[in-house]
Length: 457
Image (cartoon, rainbow, N blue to C red; front, side):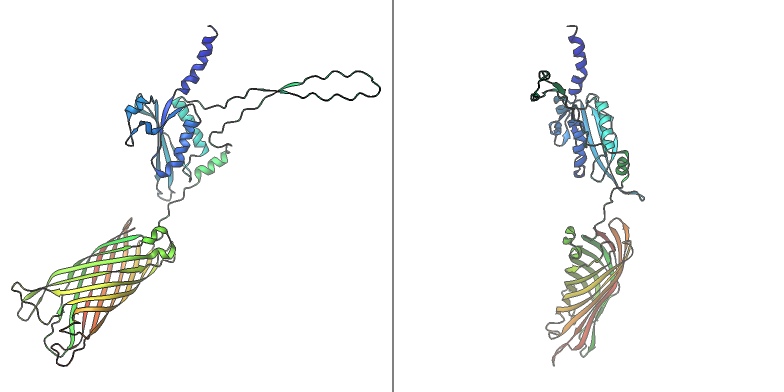
């Protein structure tokens, strides 16, 4: 009994180290998967800790203290991953914070933070430091390889020596040579088989992380703006005095425009610039007078949409040339008075046209100040009522459009856009002999500016 008591006292520390039950809760961030596995290996596979599956102590992805108590957990180890963005010339950094919370007191005892390399892993030096810190706090012991008992190797009996013809003396009897050969224990690697030199620690710790490069091609842009413009609708060389011209002052129209490039997600080079665009604007509340000073309400609207190919030939300098094709509809109409009277001699405009254009973008100060513009030829497909009976069913028309403006970056994806524009449609009118309405031509012109706020992604 005297001999057993000291022997049991020697086994108590090892028994206590093996009895530590801990749970390692990984960071949910996808980028933290490598360091999560590394921390688990350091604490659960290379020490005497008894690790419990995190799912056994969670309820709806939250820590359940009742389950923690039921599992007899003594320490909760939590991994938190953070990406520190680049600031003032310093590169971006990946960092991990590993905390140990005592279950009995519910207080965090330690929470050291370590930098990560480009593979989201601890360097060897930091891995050893983390293991030593947590082993000391959590009272863990490193696992040791099982010692191999010495092996008894029996040497074979040498063959008997040939006796010389004249027997001089009798050789000694063969003896059994017994030697003990001890197999050296294998060294346990902590994280990698060989420990790197101090030079490699310094190189790995100080190597800057690659900054996240901005996407070379835009994906979408949304513009909300206000147009201020005047428009003229007049006939030239009237032979009859029964057609009315219209000239309005400054009108205001809210406008909405959107661009979308679905192929930009795949980063296909020039093909990433193939996309769709659409815009809409509307103005109402202005009026036109007749010879009796009756005021008829007027309404104007624009709808436009089509395909565009924004060809950006450099991934870094975002200058671009953009061919465009689309359909356009412009309407200018008037309403009736309260007594039902209508305005005679004023053919409404309902122009449907094809839009063929070419645009450009020229960054002057990186992406902070960009000059842009486009020019379009607009062949008219139909124009009700002016190119229909009873006015000029045999007529034809085409249009020209131009824009010039600047984008000024405010913050992040937000820009302010100033645009000047001019749109003109020319009508060639052909009247038959004896027609009620006779004129050589007509034109509709719209000129103004637009102030818009743009979100580009």
